[in-house]
Length: 313
Image 1 (cartoon, rainbow, N blue to C red):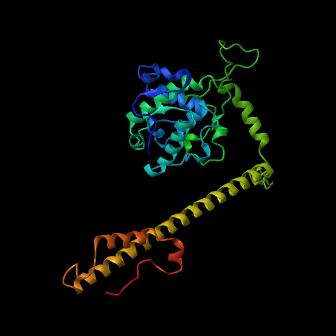
Image 2 (cartoon, rainbow, N blue to C red; image 1 turned 180 degrees about the vertical axis):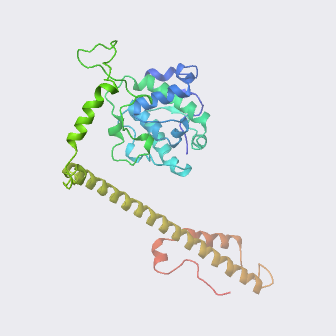
């Protein structure tokens, strides 16, 4: 994939144009980087190598310039090299749109090597500090809505940087006052025994129905229906892609087969005659025949009229 920018330095637009490799963000360690990404994108990354799919890079840039990254095309479930490459194409397109002249070493990044992804993540943090920090109101969860996500990209709890949010003080309660201590085991043992005895149902009585037996609500049903519709559309897109690939495979196989038949006929002519001159075979004729096969129109092939006649050896 062709990358923008001929040198490994950084060329950013606007006020970030003077950023160099001595910028403070390029000396940030792994722990601080992961904490920053998890806080910014509401994720739970534990390794820098998890950024190799480029999905995280795409959303960091989307937080800097919302709407300029095609987040719908980002594959968060990508797990192998060939699945990472489309994400880098989305990232490269966003770089071009925002006039970011930075070389993207795709061949190194997709290998999920620690050092390569650490340096690129440092660059993304440096760019965010110059271009994205002043933008507020970005919701990364909404930007990923409707996409199938890995466990580390799902925002299940309001955690920042991988650490749980501390307990907030209630109105009228001072933060430096120790919370009220729970009653001891001896003080609550007797009431617990009494309440347990009183709450025991009589023998033979039927237990009341639990909430688990209640069916899904209308909102849950609508959400499930929407998910089924999206997955159905995704399956149809994949089916169309597979059909296109199969047609292209068959097309080139037919071309190769016709060239093979041409070579077989030429070899038979050479074997039947004493020399190339007597067989009336020239290099120009061979090239012309091969080109006529390669550039034949699809209509001619479908009608069963190949350009080069097939002769039995």
